[in-house]
Amino acid sequence: MDENTQNFLEFWDTYTWPEPKPVFFRLYHDDDGHPLCYSMEDHAGKYIEITAEQYAESSGRVIVKNGKLVKQYQTTTSKLVPGLTGTVCCPEDVTIVVDSEPNQKWNLKTYDNN
Image (cartoon, rainbow, N blue to C red):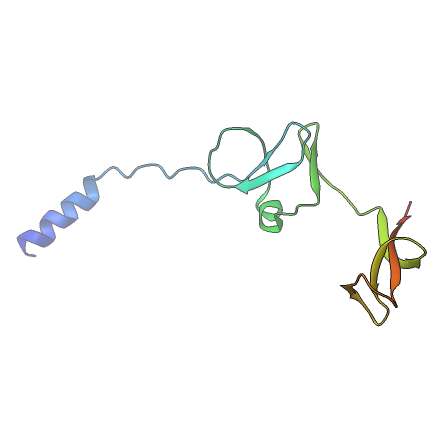
């Protein structure tokens, strides 16, 4: 065995390897519990520790209540409906807003699913 190989093996056997940094997953949130960002880094601000699965999902439909992550489900449905007032659109295409005749007025109606 040559001298370089011997030196390398001695170094390898005697080197003290640093401890790996712990891996953590966090959800940073505001005072009302609304999510600000998901992170694996240490930042200033309020946060809760979450699982790797929750981090991978990174859902915006959550809120933090009493230090726990709570999923929020949509409780309303909205739909455009014709009306006598509302946004004035082309009669053939609701995506074109016009200010002339003929036209169709549309309103957003919200239905509560509960």
